[in-house]
Length: 227
Image (tube, rainbow, N blue to C red; front, side, top):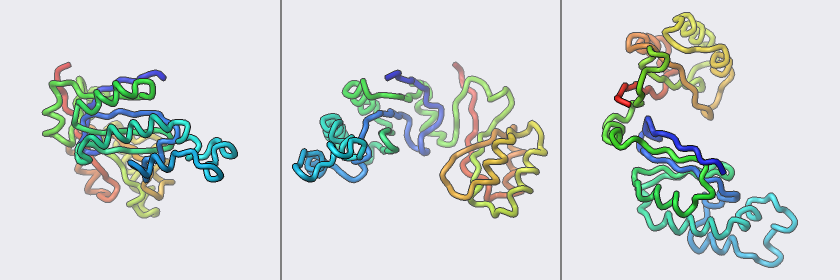
């Protein structure tokens, strides 16, 4: 599997500086199974285990990854649960932490399953932890945009959406409201997708907040640092 190495430029979930993403078929069982429950669930039980008849079932996939999942579960249980967070989606298992030794251990023990690792530059760690709503860059996006503004279309009444996106689009290159983003904003009714616009300065950001405050989610400020 090709490993993608990325630089952490903003905190994950406003808290974590490291991320490792593993691709392990059947890992979704770790949402509810741990310890002895996990080992029992993955035992080859006659008449109960569906692998032969349903090879794509979650249990069948997990059984084929049995040793890997038990090893991963055991490793994570050696750390305080407050020291990391996990996110599971399909066969992707993400771990977020501020413990470099945890990331290093996961990288060493599960090298063949890694799809992505994100780490900050050492010199930016203190900045990241002290400035939770900052993104550190060598230059501003397109040399002008100072803010990344996440939108929350599900919070805006449907009859107010056209007016909002038209108003933002009319600000010209003060923002990056594109046609595809307008379509997404109009059609979105639930909180399942995270998209953002870039905003040039604090004045424009304030105008957006005053116009339709419920449309504005998390705001990050770009901070230019030395390369």
